[in-house]
Amino acid sequence: ETRRLTESLKEACERHAEEMKKQEERIRSRDKHISNLKKKCQKEAELKRENQQRIETLERYLADLPTLEDYQSQNKQLLEAEQQVAQLQEKVRDLEATLEMTRSQIQEKDSQLEEQKRRERDLLTTITDMQQRVQQGLEDGARLPCLDFEKLRGENSSLREEQHRLKTVIEKQHQMMEQLGSQIQTLELQVSQEESSSQALRDEVLAKEQNVLELHTAMKELSSQNQELMEQNLTLQEQMSDLEKRSAPLASSALQPAGARLTQRLHSEISSCLSDLRSLCSILTQRARGQDPNLSLLLGLTSPPSVAGQDEDWMEADVLQKKLVEAQQLRRDVEELRNLILDRYAQDMGDNCITQ
Image 1: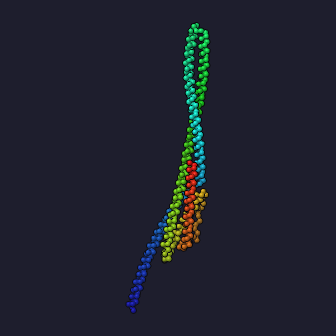
Image 2: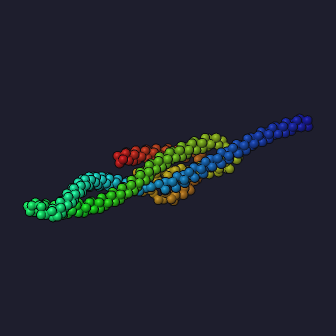
């Protein structure tokens, strides 16, 4: 009987030792699984922090972008500047035509003045010859007939009158030349001033066109970054869904409380991230429609999550279905925002082409 009891006790001890080994192996496996889950949770938390930083960067970038009123004001100023440039160019063309006409008149007056000077020189030469002839006639007056002397005196008198008349004409021509020269200087000064104003307006127009192009580029980059952020968020949700499925068996084990708390915290962070993304989509949609953004959403002054929402059991199918519906609605909001941005960008590009 003692031998049988000893053998039974030995068998019981062996079974207990085997059971203990199995339990230890199971515990080591669960510890390893928990360690992997902790690493994944840390990785997902790091991804969440990176996404939050990108969201904050996008918010600051969005705050630096010009508003719709600024764009409309710049567009209006651009149109006014282009109209002023067109008016100044028309005025410059008129002044250039007037200047060309004045120069042609001056050239014509110069030719007339040269002709008058040539005639004056000829008349002076003739007068000198006549004076010499008169002097010679006076010296030989006894030999010259009285009629020739009177004739020479009349010719001399008429030549003097012609000389006086030509001098008067030349003086008037000089005065006209001085007036035309003054007018030319005034016109050249006006043309120079108009060209300076026109160049300044051209530079201003080019600067405003550059600002408009930078605004379009910024809107495209913002749309691309927002789309990338939404895709990363959906990828994060899919990873968390897989993580929930893999961590379901662990919820019934003896180590359930620690893993459940980590999972609950991770779900809470994801819910907060979804709320922030929804707020960002709402702000971008309002700006794309030309509306003023919600200051509470813009400044992040949203109400904290309710206690009931924090106490939800994410292992239940109803809660997961509700969160899936919220994620799908957020995806539709992102798609609507992308379409609004594309329509607005196409409209701005069309208006810019018409303006140019």
